[in-house]
Length: 137
Image (cartoon, rainbow, N blue to C red; front, side, top):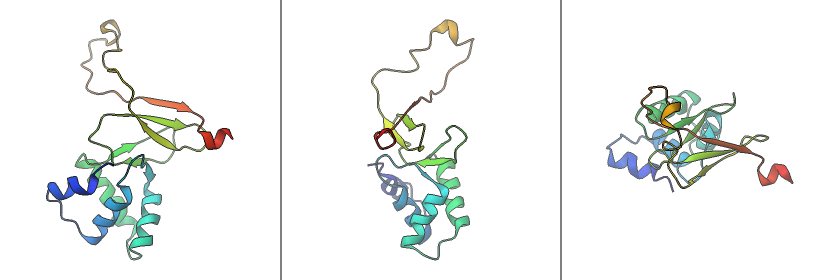
């Protein structure tokens, strides 16, 4: 579980009804929704929530480091509440579904010093691409 709602409570973030429902929609394992998907699911719970409120809430969650913004292959941005646990992504090249994966090893150590060109590497983003079981069927 991403524990997003708990993290927001601990930080003292003012949880209005709108913010709470956005956080509830995002909370969970392997959640990578687009802003439109977040809005649609939030509107099922709170019909009066506006698209602008969802976008503003997502922007603030990303700014606070509580949600990751995931961009893949020119598709719509997706929002990942698993911001506190290092992980990579597995992306279906057909339908765009995304899963969190936790391979062993340190991707920073996989880069030979001769290939860093003097950069100080701060982070690594790894996306594995393939075909999910549903699309392969």
